[in-house]
Length: 308
Image (cartoon, rainbow, N blue to C red; front, side, top):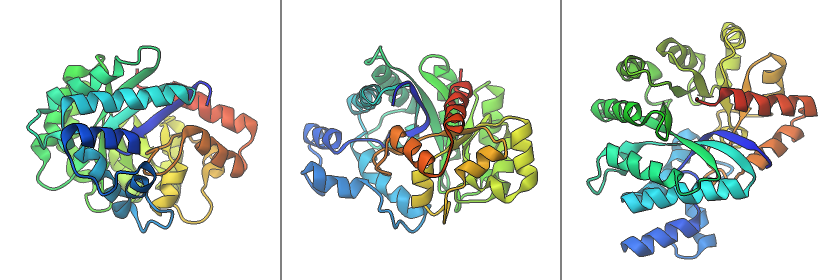
């Protein structure tokens, strides 16, 4: 996709079977399958996925092979190389450093290794977004993620995020994390309005989120739609993923969102888990009836919505 921009792209959800097999052999790890096609079944969510929680189960295996600095560097470099080959010009790659500490690495080491991966593909521009996680008893780890984001801001890291099981862990529980982000001048996006409704988006906005990850359920609240339109808050929309997780049932309301004047950007979310590319997401957009003018608007929105 020539000059494509992907603003919502998870590293662990976008690893190839080839990379995972390569790392497993290098580290002496066991895999459920050693054939690339067969391994793909363990990495890609089914189209009849029950919900977001089942979808998230596909991340355990990719995370297990990214527990060393070399593995993280190679993962980022590999993804950047593939994105460049697909014709993209820019991407913001997100991941949660705290999920890569199983072998004793500190979050600062983990992020440093990922930044090194960015620098291996000088011709392609990418930045990192560091995800805090919706889990129990991990507040200190989340606060450390924000501190590390501040340390690396402008040095490979563009922003912070909050990801995970939104339906199980409400956004409002994480206010302290984003108080620190504001204090340290770390911009952030938040996954909201995916597995939970408009109240989750309202909370993210109250915290100070500059963008909203997904935000598809914002349509359930007309006042929220009006606020998002008036303040030109970018929504990181991911159609294939949202349909898989049942965040949307029936026809995807992409055209309606644009008709309501929302600042929609189109993204992959997870290239491997969702079995998609940015070009395929734009093909979905065309099938949903978007005009060429609307397609161009979506592309321009992504360029304007980049974290600077």
